[in-house]
Image 1 (cartoon, rainbow, N blue to C red):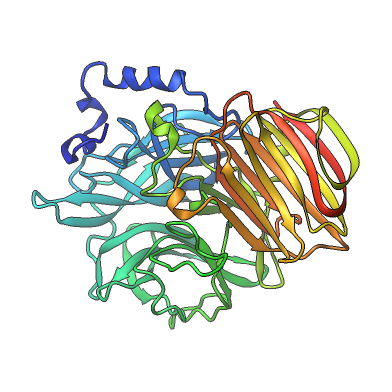
Image 2 (tube, rainbow, N blue to C red):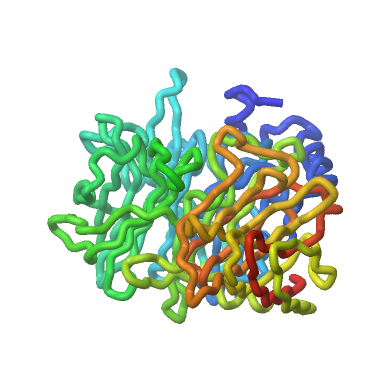
Amino acid sequence: MKMGREQLYRLIEEAEPGEREALERLVVHSPWRQKFHIQPEVGLLNDPNGFSYYGGEYHLFYQWFPLGTQHGMKYWYHTSSTDLVHWKNLGIGIAPGGPFDSHGAFSGSAVEKDGKLFLMYTGNTRTEEWVRFPYQCMAIMERDGTVTKLGRPVISDVPPGFTDHFRDPKVWKELESYYCVIGTQRTDHTGCVVLYSSADLLNWRFEGELGTRLKQFGYMWECPDYFELDGAGVLLFSPQGLTSEGNNCRNIYQSGYLIGDPLRLPDRDFRHGEFWELDYGFDFYAPQTTQAPDGRRLLVGWMGLPEIEYPTDQHGWAHCLTLPRELTLDNGRLIQRPARELVKHRGRMAEVHTVMHSRAADMKELGGTVYELLAHIWEGGAERFGIEFRVGPNERTVIYYDSAAGKVVLDRSESGQGLALEYGTQRSHAVALRDSMLTLHMFVDTSSVEVFVNDGETVFSARIFPEQVSTGIRLYAEGGSAEFRVVQWEIE
């Protein structure tokens, strides 16, 4: 049942007697609870926030609405991990409800200073007439996990030339200064990113708009993230309002990146190449990165999208985060690989080596609802070849290579309970075979799949909602042959 505005913007302590318990009972009976992805215990999860390494642990917060599966009063929920594999739920990190976040603690980021973790976020407020006033706020986390919000915003005003869509600060340190980028909307209703600088994280100076070539590129840029990798500057952001074109920009909203020269003050000019999507699947948004102690750049995204209804909405919970990914740079493109720590998940292994010639076959050695799978497939003249998984009497999800088109296709038209059908049931992206070989590295959870193609050259993320009896794996080739070497691990 849809909530009205007053119900959506309540604090946890304003819940009706038994309201949360009713949601918890729904969650317990949901058949689509994930086994190895971060998900809310109850309610709605969205953007990852405050991704950082601090005090010998990774800390990862996420946007959380605890009283339903619509977007309402947002909290920061806190999780932590020593190994990127096993995550602990630590409860509320930042609670809204103060004068500068009366209608939600919106997205933000974290940076360490003086042995403490500084959490910079957008405080959402509304007047009685429902006019928005955003504030950029700061909270400070101690080593024991205690979080204290500052009594005043660190950025109180929206600069001239921009609307009240002004949010999601991503902060970093460079030499002895701190910087943050904020996603915003110009007064002509086009999206962009602005830059601030600070000596102490408390007093911020507006430097101006980040200069890009994308002057008319959607109506709002959310969740920006700037970092440098192998001597290049990388800007991630999630533009809203792009028009789909061919295989590109097929979802309601996108997330992608620009690669260019390192950003330098005072001109803020970012000389960059073209915009690339980060993920070509159905469900990916608002990614955030951090740097590991060994220097690796790690990324986590929201495996979901705004303004889309999901089957679990009726079960008292919604959405999950992606697995952590390692980012590297190759020939002007970001490569995304599953974090190497994820091998710790691996349990019992099964293998198959076979050749398919214009046929399909169920693999009795393989299957399940939760697993990691690595397939090396050599094209031997087949017009199309691929893997069907979560196969049941009336269900299957398919990842395949179309040789004539030179692209990988993910098809969830028969994956079970449908969603976002107005945006189509297939996603595809151009991929070149390597010495006639395609590599598919898949992580299948109860209600999701993440596919890393050709060692992270392309990634597809999707939520799928099949029946629990749909556990089969089928290999196939059409119009010719394909050779398959497949290894599957149970995930413990």
